[in-house]
Length: 163
Image 1 (cartoon, helix red, strand yellow):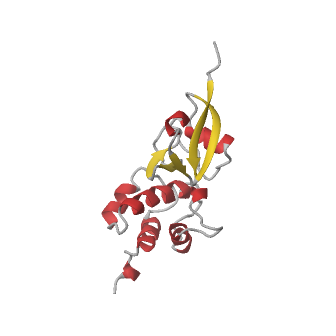
Image 2: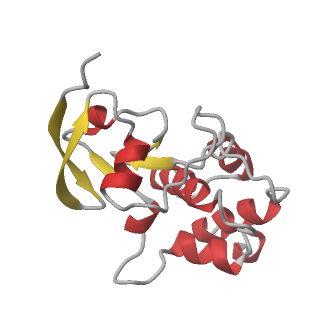
């Protein structure tokens, strides 16, 4: 059995150009964690069922455990590490922290990235839109209330945002 042929893949990662050597069948999750050191992207179910590995590709949430690295060539991949600006948490990251949207924290990067994708396309979502956007992300610790409140807070649509 021959080894898979590796090729150089050029993409943007968190707003910077990178080149990686990856076989055609290499999963983006493996490239991010093992080659590029982006360990905020979590390995959960490895089958597209939990959302822990959610990243943004060209601004759209995608599961890194179901996406091959070769599919990302020429595209912009964003991980949880890329949301911070000048070492400061993004508004959404801060909202998760302040609203206690994370308990064990394992699902949090995927939740944040799914929510970030939503907020970029729908800046002021209602609760149903938030629930739909996070529907592919599983949290085993919470009842999702604090997570939804965090997204509402970041969007300025929470109960405290009302006049």
